[in-house]
Length: 400
Image 1 (tube, helix red, strand yellow):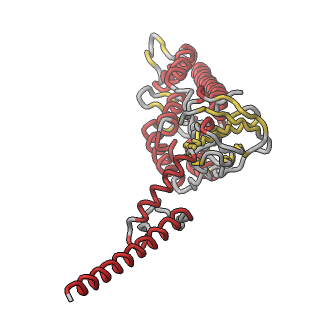
Image 2: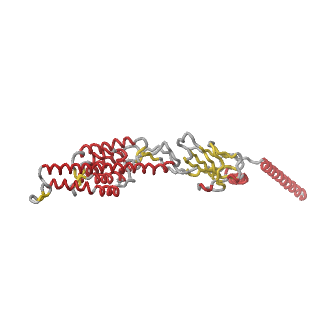
Image 3: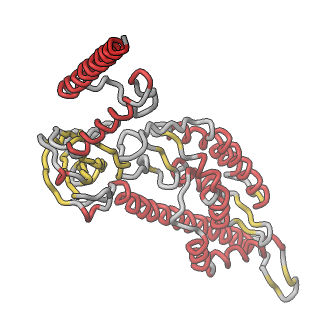
């Protein structure tokens, strides 16, 4: 059985699929932009010829500068389309995604960038607009952080982002707006998105400290998908103390909902306190969530692990360190506590953590020995008193 978390296996596939869709959209928009530029330039060129205005003539020299600019755009669109495509592939990081690409369609992106005007070269260029969107949204870590919200709140993000982008698309679609104006407007839209998205709930519903939890998680704009709670599969070790020859039991229960169909595997690492998986040997596999030992012995001391699987994927691993105390050691501890108690006034132990809370039984043999000693001491005392009185009377009689 594999022990890898399911979300780790799916995130790369999701990003790969999105990357392919992203590049397809970019190339389509670039081609559409260049086709429009070529059509506009050719139309302007033909209209100039019909009016009898050549772009260059021996007698008139350069004709209308506007016609020259349109001819330059046409030339760039014909000979430079491959170069622009290559630059877009090199400069646009296809592996980075953000809320913009999760919620804004390719058509709206095309409308937004259709009026982008490179003032330095005097041409429209959608490729540069896409690169600017990448910088302002996709590569902005503040936007990515604001787009990480609780599961089920992604529609709120969509509404917030559309409220910032769609009015801009309507405003800039048919214009010819310089790149500096675009940058200023997009930066302002990104800041408004961050402010509004930061108010969306971040309560993930995850229950720490461990386990793969399907009902909790976040919506992550970097993948346009739900992410799990990203907690470790391995839980901390729980200590279980038991006396020799007593019954011990460990329950494989977790504080979060499990899938409907699960399988449990119990493993044991004898004499070790560890979470290293290669040190364990399987002892049981099935559906029983309680692992019990009727009579615990020294050979049972070690770490017991319970691993829960769902469809051959590990969900959580619980660890129990079973510490077995021998009866001789336990009896020695009781005698030590009895001795300490006998030294205290009133025969009571101090009220401290770990002190014995119940009265200790006094052995009957010890009680009989104590009573015998007291009676013997009393008889000896009476005998000594009688002897001293009798000796005094005898001495007085001899003197008389």
